[in-house]
Length: 209
Image 1 (cartoon, rainbow, N blue to C red):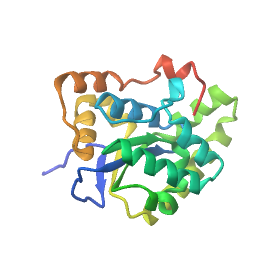
Image 2 (cartoon, one colour; image 1 turned 180 degrees about the vertical axis):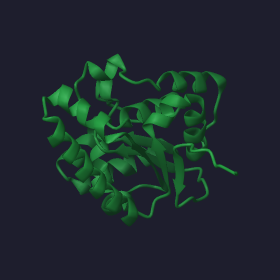
Image 3 (cartoon, helix red, strand yellow; image 1 turned 120 degrees about the vertical axis):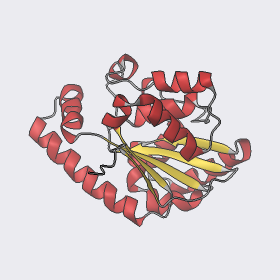
């Protein structure tokens, strides 16, 4: 019997790489977007001038998304384009804006990470004292909406399983690096692989999304 290995990784709308690109790390809150952002940073992708500490989130992009300020976001993208051929940002909330704001991104590529919804619910329970069943319902609805937005987008996307990343970190880093077209030095891969860990104390200390 010929069985295909489940890599926990899927390239959606594959497209050729470009010398100038913007990489978006997004997903449902508490699904592993911080981990993806750290990996990208270790691989040499500029992820923001003012990162929000343990959650590794671009504070300027975060404010644009939080206030739904599309004009400010567009200006910020042009500034980043001028300074970096390849740059990126991590923002879970951007998943809902993807088909609306992707037009402001230069050759965008999206990394969307998925995680077991009970693990997401338990994280919300521990961090926010949210009822577990309520948190499960929130995660389910968030994924439903996110998948609709993802299907409306035109961007190439790399869909990743958080659990599979933990099980095979070297392979996860390689796939992310190839998707983003970055050079994979031994030191960069080692540092990026070290960023793949469950319960990172830097993140847990923040109690953030």
